[in-house]
Picture 1 (cartoon, rainbow over the protein chains, first blue to last red):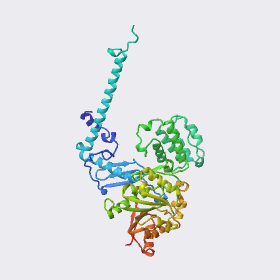
Picture 2 (picture 1 turned 90 degrees about the horizontal axis):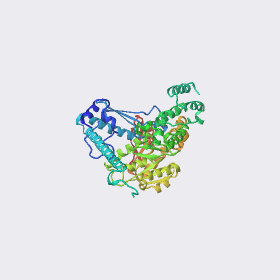
Picture 3 (picture 1 turned 90 degrees about the vertical axis):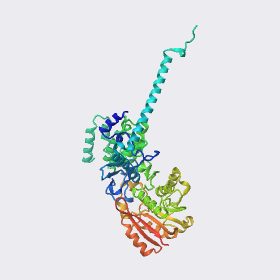
Picture 4 (picture 1 turned 135 degrees about the horizontal axis):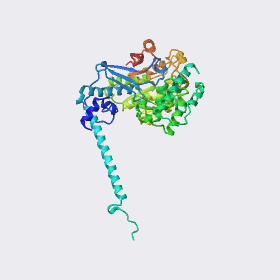
Length: 158
Length: 341
């Protein structure tokens, strides 16, 4: 994908990184080479849990554990309901927010964006190779069927 | 059927005119919630449609958190923890026959007000996924904070790696949530866990085995209110005690959600008239079981901290009340107590 096309996609509609990737991206398990993500200040955050008005503790059994985290200085809001644990969702929401802040602060210089584009590029290269292989095999098969060359089977020639 | 239900049904039908299931759906909803009949399924249905259909059906029958329940169950059948984890395209695919049968079976259980955690037989607790089985008590989100508090406090006292050789006793382990979380986070920790319920002991061991934590955990069926000498002889001195003991006041037991009353072990909830009967026993044991300066970490009812502080100051000279901490809803919820040196 040309950088021009990327720029167009980035300019119109929701940002590229929000559409195509699962967040957190870098902080997800298995990704090495951590990049410099902004540190979060808890005072800058406003957190909401859907806990309802019940008594809480043992007296309540509610399954709502979605976390909404707002970064007051930038207005960025992260909503996380990836797990069924409030504690885990809070952590993930902070990881996601740190990554979004990195993109927000660095813009085009964002290391995260660069890695995401790299990831798209790799996937496209892979797909292109797979398609090329399929095409090669298809052509080879055709060669066999049309009886060309020495590969055809001339059965029981007298 | 109430006029509210009728209105709801009317709106539903208006939005989904033409779906063949609806006419039989309509006639089946005149049953009371107790004997509620599931919406029939004779044609193909997408994941998205199933979620909507069941959310509507739960609402009609007064089941709490109707949409969430529906989403969790269907996400689970599709192999995900939450609805957010399901690919948007997969939502528009028809459910396979196996999936549909499973969704209908599980949602029908939810119609009896069975907690979602028991319906899907699992739930998340911090970094772990645990098996859930009625009537063993389902871990609450507040207890995740108790574990966080214990870890933070231990790092403060013993350093970032929790020091060497750490032993703890958990009283009333239930599904094993607290013990297993601590074991997961602290590689050198050894835990002795008790519960007066055999079902809880079995479930804790099952969860320990599933998580590979069984080697550092010993679980026994013992009543903390019962023979304390038996306990003392089995479990040597420990560095700390942790518990989420039954702490509801008997009068609170009257007004609990159907999910809790019908399916969870009341013995895991009822703390007697003042909610402190089990807590009192734990504190009496604490002086005998803890090493000097060892700590007790408790989750309690919000009215308890000042009462516990007073009880310790007036009647338990071997203990020192250190601190009260609030939970995320700002309710006083956790007590930290120390055995005097």
